[in-house]
Image (tube, rainbow, N blue to C red; front, top):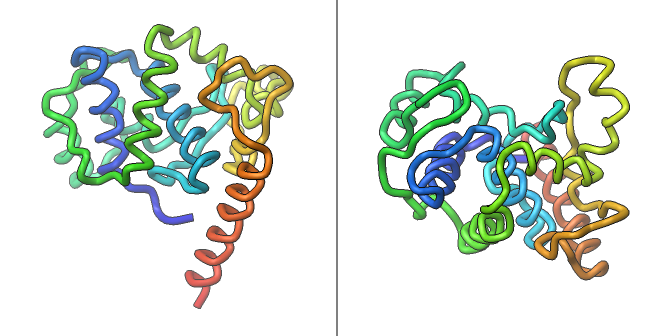
Length: 198
């Protein structure tokens, strides 16, 4: 997989904050990012920003995007860019200070972001966390997380799996297309790894 793109991460947060009227709860923002990534992977076979996801108590967490939302553990370059678009309000929320720059994204990514917000805008962060617990990429760790009080590495391939009960149309996908996108994602990752080893 390609390297994490911090500008896309900050713009994703800006997009969702602007949709919320400018101010956004951090927990909700990270779950909206998860939903956008899950939709994009299943429909287009690619990650939007190549973050590392971890399974934690309140669901999937895109690790570097969490740092961007909090304004912590940033390089000077990342901090400077973040300050142009986001402002920390408290430990649990941030505010957008600029307009969203959609030029960094493909049409498929923009579609995924719109689908995520349309589907989950009425839920708060804790409700969204409970929703994420339905999905295999998190639920496979459900028995471990309370014991270790930590985080577990998530695998993007698990985003292609379906839960027993899938109440949200946003993630429903034709089985043949889903299998094709999964294979495409795996092949692209293997190709990228091979190129990096040259």
